[in-house]
Amino acid sequence: MSDPLPIELRERAVRAYENDEGSYAVIAERFQISVRSLIRWVARFRETGSVTPYPKGGGNFSKVDIEAMN
Image (cartoon, rainbow, N blue to C red; front, side):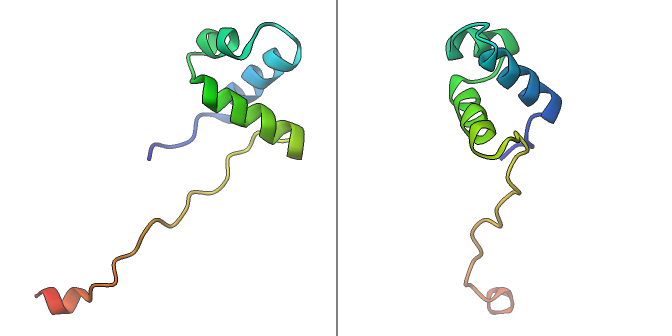
């Protein structure tokens, strides 16, 4: 998974959508982001007032004992 996009980009894109500067598709194309990302950012902004990304998850950890593999 790549790093989250900059907060400034998220804020500008959400602000553009909230100011009725276009549809999700138009704004996403303008900022060169996916429509789905913009939808999530707008929803997060409406719920929390922030577009700050959630912390990265820990992923899946193997139950295999590394020493048993040696």
